[in-house]
View 1 (cartoon, rainbow, N blue to C red):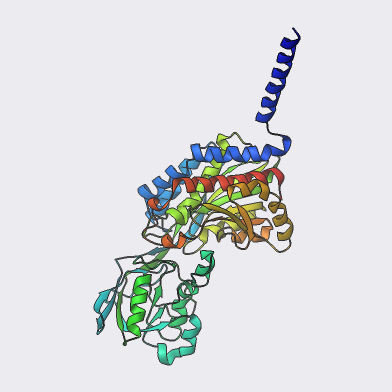
View 2 (cartoon, rainbow, N blue to C red; view 1 turned 60 degrees about the vertical axis):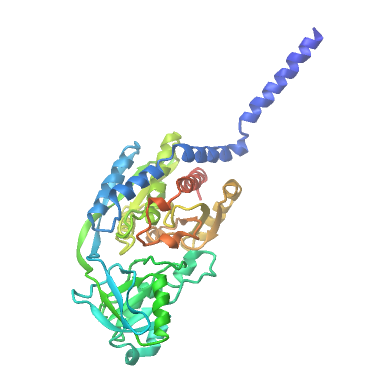
Length: 466
């Protein structure tokens, strides 16, 4: 009988130990919920099918285009199926630039190579050359400063060729991009100031290939607008080699033009907070993309990340303390009209964004988040966020200071924390602003991990505040 009693006693102890092993201790509650977020994102996420539809059925979504309008309606409908508290469209007027016919850029009558067509794309917002095109001698430069030093005597009547590569020694490729992109954004007006007739720009990528990268330019008021075209990195290398041997002429023909502004929309959906509804946590990306690919990484990925955060929140029956708002911004690529319109409307309503998280760096493997804020609040809010590192480091995530995102930057005056989602950046500029930024460049699992990463940070900010 005594043996039987001991057997029952020890069996009971073992059973109790097994039960306690299955229940998280109070301090482990967050870790267990974050694990649940990841499990759900990797098994029941909707980001990849949504992105597949957006890229294969709608395609490139340049602001003002029919495709952009279709993307607005599609994402509105998808958010509407999630049973959110509110889904709405926020109007904004956007620039309507059209590319026109296929660009022609050709080295003509070279003694070294003869006549050679170059892989090229007109830069966004550029004027066209006219139907007859432009033929002129090319002068190579490596910086805006060099153009100014050469002056009108050397620049007038020529095509200025900006050929400063992105710095391959920068481990974070966005820094390399930032160090080279002034050639594209400011180069045309700088060259025009000294009488250039057109501009060629080396594509913004560290890779040597035959794929041209488009992107926006900014014409300066009071300076004549001239046509601007990007050429592939291989063609930039070729042109540079020829220029070292002889004077070289290039023919450029583009028919792009800027039409009248068009009405478009930001797409917004939210779940109202149960305790602090006036504290908003925004998740978002930009819905527009360039027209030459289908904008899979830039920034379809960011849009479906934000949408899937809402989907997973509803699937887990998570009722947030604070208002969680998904915002799909229009016209980040060539105007930022959506981000400006959103901030203007938000400020007018007296809203407060406790945090805004933007995903606009692709759908690659998550590495963490960078953040910035108004100087009055940044240190305290960033310090609070770093307390959660032990919960996120097991998933390969870290925090850095720095930028956040173009569309959320106008919210800085509200003194919340502005956060940029940072996936691995090594391959991003292989696809950025190109015709190959399509769904086959996106890995489903990496995309889903992005949703899980963002949702985990949203959960922690919502639960503990900043």
